[in-house]
Structure formats: C-alpha cells, structure tokens
Image (cartoon, rainbow, N blue to C red):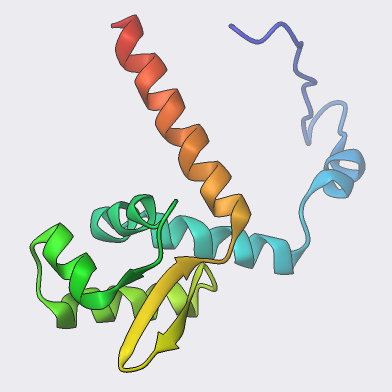
Length: 123
C-alpha cells in the first residue's frame, strides 16, 4: 500500500465504526452536487469544452470551430453544463460567451490532468 496511513477496519460482525463513518459522509446535497460534476465530466466532449474554458470565455460558434462539431451539438452540451451549474454565459449583442463559474471544477480539471501526466511519465 502506497499510503502510509493504516486503514481502520469496520465490520458488521466485529468492531463497527459505522457511527464514526457516518459523521464523515458528505450531506445528501453535497453528494448530489458532486455527482453532477462527475456526470458533466463523464462525457469526453464536455470535458474537452471545459478544458477550453479554463482561461477563456468562448462563444458557441468558436467552440464549434475548435471541436469540429455542429453549433447545435455545442449548444446542447452547454445546456447540460449550465444545468449542472458549472458554466454560465453573458450576452454581448447576439453572441453568448460561456465561462466556467465553478472554480473547484477548474481545480479538479487541473489536478486530474496533472495526475494523468504523472502516471504516463512513470510508464
């Protein structure tokens, strides 16, 4: 085991720590928000869109050009990301510019990519 911390064993037929474990669990609301983030990231197109938005506000047409997919597909994916409360947009004349509003998602993307790159170097 890489982690030097020894895990505590809890068992229904032995020593149970269920009360202690229950206190550490996130609230139901936190779990729902967490799963929304992972649902958003579970689609490669949405993940790529989010990486593109790390340092930019991007309109639908520009994202469509970047990814080589239709504007309607990009719009649909942005709608999902808005529903998951990860992105928002501002209107400028007839254009909508999307950006990430959840800073923790940005941190998660950076951390996940860094981890992947570290694992690739070890191979």
